[in-house]
Image (cartoon, rainbow, N blue to C red; front, side, top):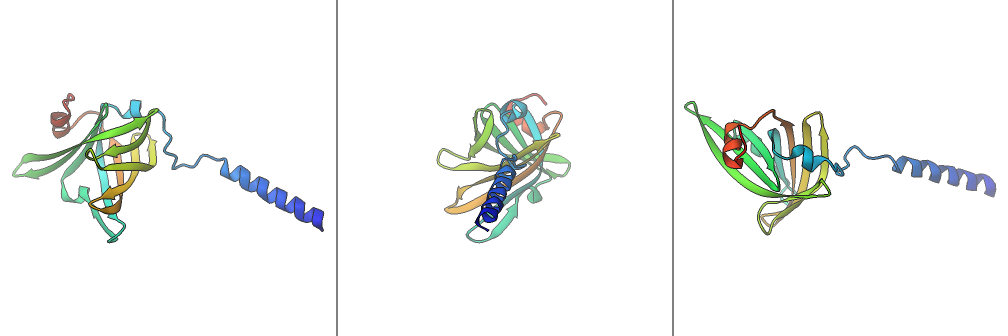
Length: 164
């Protein structure tokens, strides 16, 4: 009886060990991210900010006609576009990326506010990222879903200095 229990326990441990060796799909260890994303703009389809304290969620992309993220070296530009009377009005924010070993570790919103990457997936021009950190004295998660563009939209080109 003792031998069969030991064999069962060993088989269970071995099975669980093999299962945990698989690379999870949500791995943030994309060592090519920095090279592949540099000097590229993305159409942001969702930019959700979730406050864990108040349990309130807001989606930045719902408030604008277009939202784009543009990566340039260690800079990250957020371009928010509203269209009024046939004219584009742009609002810009600039952040600093933290790539180490090609992997996106997080972003600096300003010199004191850092958001860590907790989820990163890039496939066929589509990118999904989850950042987390403290914003406005509360813990937040930021979920971004975006699609790579062939060029840079006018607003993104204007703020980043990259060609349109």
